[in-house]
Length: 107
Image (cartoon, rainbow, N blue to C red; front, side, top):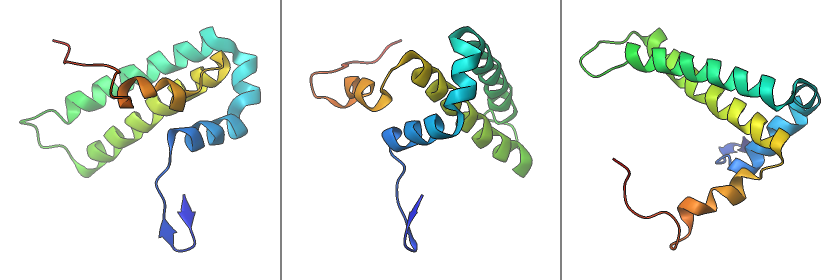
């Protein structure tokens, strides 16, 4: 997103709105189960891209670009699923931004 000539950060709320505007009709018709399957397929593609870019390997520029693309795809499909389920991701993420939210680290 840009504001004049200066780029602006994309918020989760703005991204979720953009995904809703562009894809909601198709996504809602597919439903949550079908959309969840697309999300899982993208998670699998991300897993492969992570292996290609693992420490100790020398990934190509194409492999690095693919890694970024797969992260974006997973976020987009997760956002699509949230739209279908009526979940506001910006509100849900407060769990991680509020001081009284999640504490500690999972093993």
